Length: 108
Image 1 (spheres, rainbow, N blue to C red):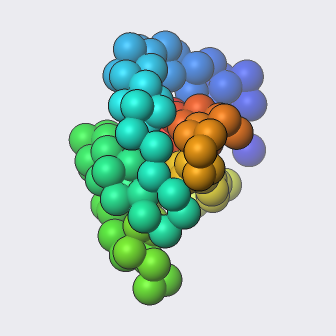
Image 2: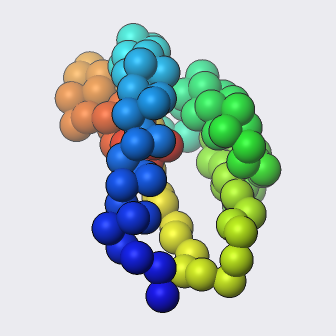
């Protein structure tokens, strides 16, 4: 079983190193709100970010044009994690529900 404190520290350090890029990602999604199933720019930005981090990305996941799945291969047989995010906006409100932040946090 991994040392949870060490895993947590590694995760937080990785997030801190990418802080500026993550904030820029969130702001870019916020600047161009897209309604559900139309969030092409957000999906492109998120998938490119993940690919830049070494994830293997499958676009158009489950038959949805703007859905994707990103997989990263771990070093062992340890625990697996699934992270789901939202990145759509609301009509007339944009990202009033903070989905740009949810997307950034899930991508971190």
